[in-house]
Length: 90
Image 1 (cartoon, helix red, strand yellow):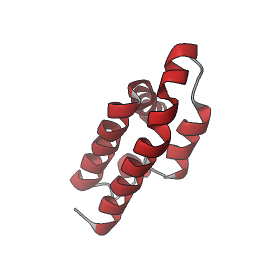
Image 2 (cartoon, helix red, strand yellow):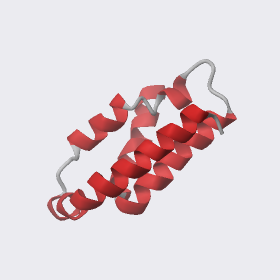
Image 3 (cartoon, one colour):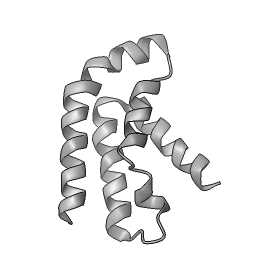
């Protein structure tokens, strides 16, 4: 795994454990759209991992690991992130 991928996964893990774990119950209970948190992942540019001309197997693996990390604390946000990929590629 590249240093860049490793650093991204470390950042996502930290953010998920510190921030997302704290707000999950609120969003699940209210069914509000977590705009602030979706925006964070767009700013992290995780979607470039799949949409870049230079995307490779490691990029796909890193993206899937991001989704896996997020889904452990905030499953509905992980689902939203997956649907955003399909919007971007269509």
